[in-house]
Amino acid sequence: MNDEFRKQALQKQVKGKFKGKQTLPSRVKPIYPEGAEREFQRVAWGYLRLVNEVVKKHMPAIRKAAAAERERNRRQDDAGDLMLAIQKAFRSMGDELERKTSSFGLYKKLESLASLTEKLSIQEWKRTVKETLGLDIMDDYYMGEFYRQALQEWIDQNVALIKSIPQDTLSEMQSIVSQGFQTGATLTSIEKEIRHTYHVKRSSAKLLARDQIAKLNGQLTKQQQTDAGVNEYIWSDSGDSRVRESHHRLNGKKFRWDDPPVVTPPGKPVRRCHPGEDYQCRCVALPVFDISTVDVPASGRTKGGG
Image (spheres, rainbow, N blue to C red):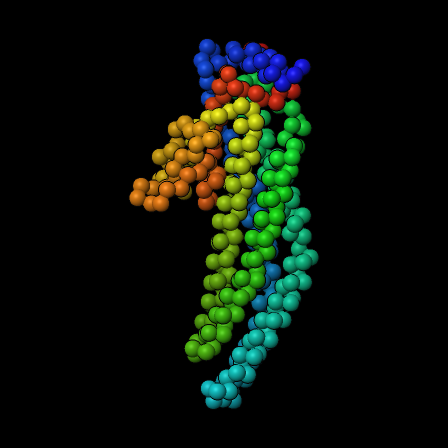
């Protein structure tokens, strides 16, 4: 059976679900993959924790150098000894951090994360099609070139993003220590600032997890729907207090995949995005099936007949 005959047969099969109407909105709301987001957080936090371990190990050397500097009551122009000690300590930290991160297995962890996100996305798409059209989707359909390439690009991008976190954090901490001693800050205040920097980076890693999982989920959702002949969707926000107002006003409205809506507040530079594409966007797209374009990769099994 060629593609056109297959498509016509499928449309005839699901025609009863439309009850004489041209379009049929999804009967279910896909669940955002929070499990994948939490796993991403654990991976990013685990990678960042390596910085904390290295700094804790080498801080005693800096404390010792600072104490020796105070006891000798050296002149200001001799303070270079302390700066050299700080530089040496942070070089050692950088070398040790490189060894620790190289054995962390980041690529494999992100590869598993990408597969988990894809699995959850397909699971929700299958549920949507089953409950709305009564069709089962072919299990191996979403193993094509687009999906392989999308996952690979996401993995490569996030390996680079997460790899930059420890070295950037270490560089910031070195600046805090060096500038602190140069300006006469106490060791206690310097260490407090280091802890603060670590916690800020940890919070940033949490936000990165939400942003990157949402983007991958949104990308997969768009491809799944457009592959199935879905041209329109209904914007659905996450329904909690974290939803930004500019996204909440889109909730329940219909948009086209080839014409993303404006997601910025009035008066701000215009930015257009689909659900999941904006920074930390947990919104999802509810497909609107059209009887004249629907082309779901069905396995042949149906639920409840036509």
